Length: 357
Image (cartoon, rainbow, N blue to C red; front, top):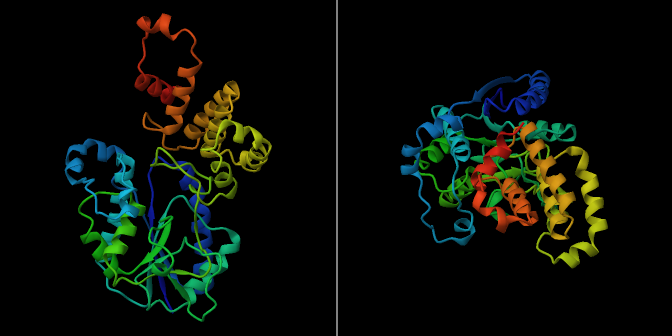
């Protein structure tokens, strides 16, 4: 039976909305600590902010390598690492470094959790169940995974390697100090986002015992649509069923999309009240594909407003801005006559859209 739960929260100081909502999780954990009579120690990892990364970007560029590893499941996941992604990696590394200084103990657990993690009321009992289990058989325990039909055997945890190769999310996981030490030592170079990097570390260390509970505990709020991503220029809501169904139409022909637009509208209306800029962005692109340009313009502008309001990742790399700029390009009928007097580049226009309040 554990007596201490150490919580290391991956947090960016400027994300005040997430911090406010995260208080709900801390309150729930405080109630659990009283119920279970365990001590909870919380530490916020707020170092290595993107602004700090930018100041030292020359040094970080020396640590980045995009060389292939000759495994398409990983090589296909390589893309340019921005300062926000590097910040996220460094924060997790700092958490591993902190935990690595301690000794493995059956009395203490070490939870690394991101500030966009959600703990739904129906999952609180799942967390209690996890705290009651034997923790001697795993080295890394993901708390954000689940499978549709978990095995009916008596084992407490499911072997990650039997089901997955790439982690779908990394919003919350328990890690042993010896594993944190190993992961930290093997993370001097940057090649992938943290989620893919973690998956790569798991692949490279087959002796590390990686499991997840039979029932999900936490869920990634930015992959559900409750928060926009704070690090990615494009964010797919993989845990949002309506979004995924809408997304299935994005590569279809305009005629196919038109034929099914009543269904698309119905799906969007389900998620509309969440005000997810990612869902709005997708809906705007579908409108654009069927020629409803004015409607698409309004939805994409609203999506940018929500992205800014909700403190999401928004700069000249953002796909949502690129798509809005493209929309404006294709609606201009006087480009040829006015091109000589063009004042703004596409890059500048994106910057104006970001800065415009």
